[in-house]
Amino acid sequence: MLSKKRSTLRAKASKLNTTLIIGKGGIDEGIYNQAASIINKREILKGKVLKSSMFDAGEAARDISKNIGAEVICDIGNKFILYKKRQKTAANRTKDPIHGKAKRAKGLSFGKNSLNKHRNLKLKIRAKNKINSTDKSRQERRINN
Image 1 (cartoon, rainbow, N blue to C red):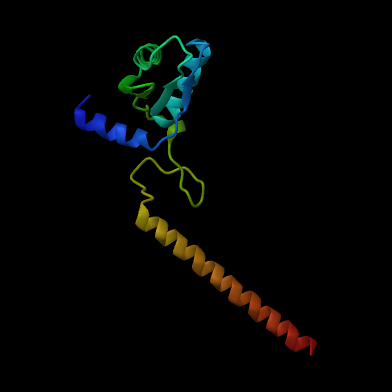
Image 2 (tube, rainbow, N blue to C red; image 1 turned 45 degrees about the horizontal axis):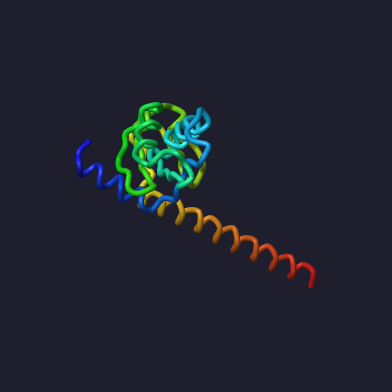
């Protein structure tokens, strides 16, 4: 992996909370399963090895990465970072944050501008409905008086 990519991954991981903690129980099948599920969801795993553990961060990172097929980005002190590129499948498609529907595979983009368009459209519809409802309540008052 290129150092530029490695440094960007380290920068991303610095903002993350620790997601995997290895204690005095050591590394077993449960740790491997947990690490695999985390790395499949996020691509980046940030782990911590407690002082009571019989491993240090470098050994733990190499062992876990070897088992789950990830790459060690760095291990400093008692923390380590692993990375595994996510495989693109139909289940991993991103969803439209407004409607909750899956995006089409061909070029449909939900970037910042289109999200703003969707928000503006929703606000206009809400405002229109609010005006219509106030008009109805005014008409009802006129009829009752």
